[in-house]
Length: 327
View 1 (cartoon, rainbow, N blue to C red):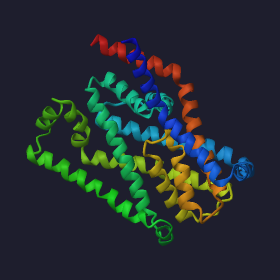
View 2: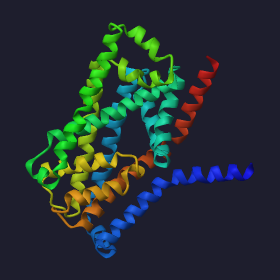
View 3: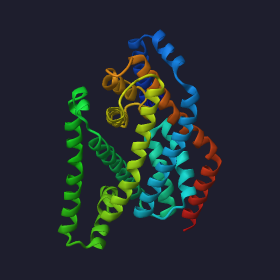
View 4: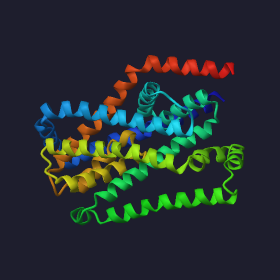
């Protein structure tokens, strides 16, 4: 029995470590591909007198826009939350999310489940809605920036964009079909959805007003553009001479691939995709050095914000848990 428990613990640990192993192996392979010497030279050539202040400004701007977008979602679909409270919760979830992305998102869900008294799966569904909105905002940003030169670099870009854009009307059709079926009786739909976990998970997707959905989408798009623009500036500071329009589109595409949760924070996958798409504009070693540096800015920034707000975050969580137990 004890042996089986140890074996299960080992398997669990290996599963949790696997994304980090994949990320590190991928990075080692990419460094080997461009040669370690050329990579080291590219790292040394970076214009850090501009990169460091730009990094601090970009991270804080992107982070605060992210907090604002998440706050609007929680306000509209779960419960009103002050900006400072959301700042603390997002900081803690970012720290936890680096260790385990799923647990990072679940920590936000757990906190607002305790605060609102709504089912955990409903709050989790609201956060899934945020992920869906992020994908749509990324696709819209991609669609707005497709240029002829980009299509010659990667013919998949327009097809990928069109395919993902179809997710939006598909979602709307399902949403309106459910509401039509129940004659737009939101209370009846809400009662049915809240009666089981799958329904709770779909609750926010179906019940949130369409105007609120558009508001959240508009609040999330700037975050995508700001992050992509910073990463494009980073490429320029590492001597990758990519034109703005093409660079922005290809960086957005790389960010989309990095959003697939294979490695922590897209480490390795973002660099690999960037090299594939941008190699015609600069040396592969420069692209690797730039994308790794810009990637690390957000990883280190998240960890530092999490550590800074750790004590306040733990206090908030314990206070809400105590309030929930007393109800």
